[in-house]
Image (cartoon, rainbow, N blue to C red; front, side, top):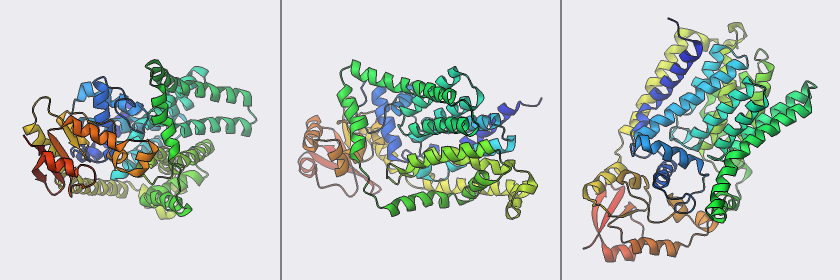
Length: 474
């Protein structure tokens, strides 16, 4: 029996997503952001309030998603990585379906999904470590599917609702919504269509997008913590004005396109080749411009920002594989030869797994070893403090002693100033809690806890000259 086309595509994309990310499931830490999400989600699942009891600069959405998963996954970090891979696979499938509805060939649509998965799975800072973009792109892709499949106002309302859910995971989803609205208006103006109707649909989508954020605002207002929520979520973000030189933006811009140079070539072909459906190229260009603006405007050179752009990037790059063979530039026709193409994919897959093994399995997992040591010695009710590796809280099933979970918030001056953190007060909280164990990176800091540590603690473990553990004296 022949599988339906969509089931076949979904199976392929989920299999690719899991297989190319499998080795990355097992290290305790890939990136500090992921560890922060897990620790705060753990606290939320226990009834603590985000932006009140535990604080970060991200919107609440990612913590609610992971807190909901905790009842199923517990403290198994590999389980959250598996879910992230499945989310990527589903996102790629929604991208595939949207392209099929828009008229792209099966090969072009499936290739777009596979390209999206490959882009997310090659480099640690560009997608291997699950981040907010990993999750909010799922809702953007869902909105994209509705945007192209249905013309009713209900569909646009639901599409907006999906974008709104993505927005409360990370506010930059606003740029995807603006791209969708801009395309609606562009089409109506170019085709001399009904501008009022297009505008009304865009506004309907915008209305749907406001609902999730309005619910979040209403919740904090109801519990009497609106001011604290607004300060941590909105005010603080405005206190990071970018003073980067223009050259910084140029380097960050070109770094992505050079890092993924083969796909960049396919993206350019998809954007400019006249054989590609005009509406696909137009929408791809508009979406790409807005997504790139979202990446560059914050002024921070964080690779994971580009995950948002990977959707329109893949959307256009996949069209290369839908071109008639005679339309493919001669110097690239070898890529469309099955024997060569599949052989190269196989070689890339094996090389990728070997490099991931080197990065994630061959290196000592010192953070996990530190957590194992603590778990062997901790008693019920014992508390710990860790300076840098917050994943230790999650793996020992303890919660932080202060609200600021991500170490940069408590140790970098720009965050301390922006968030108006009273460092002395927070240090006093930690000391008053008298944690049984204090965990520091090697070499051990001598700035804040030196005298307190010398007076009350003894070094009991040095894990690979990476993590140093101190135990409180009797």
